[in-house]
Image (cartoon, rainbow, N blue to C red; front, side, top):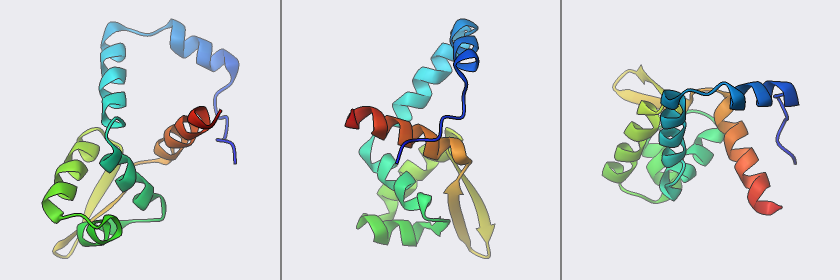
Amino acid sequence: MRAKQSYSANRIDHLIENVTENELCDLAELFKVFGDSTRIKILYVLFHGEKNVTEICESLDMNQSAVSHQLKILRTSKLISSRREGKAVIYGLADDHVKTIIAMGKEHIEE
């Protein structure tokens, strides 16, 4: 299934032509976050809905320390959100852009 094309050609041209140095740096930092397979795996787990850290650890067969470290990076990069539910912290995707970025990347590597 192809990624939903939510940007028109004109919108893409506008975004590319009107970019500042700060935006380029921020974009480079964002793409660095996608450069770790563990973080991509966590995002894939969260595609299926919100999870607490224990559920993420079980899904990935990883220890809590390693997962928590990656969750912090994803949260700092605004790719995931978190909320408290009693003593547990529940994680989810920040918005649909995350799925779109992953889907477009997957589509690109499959071409």
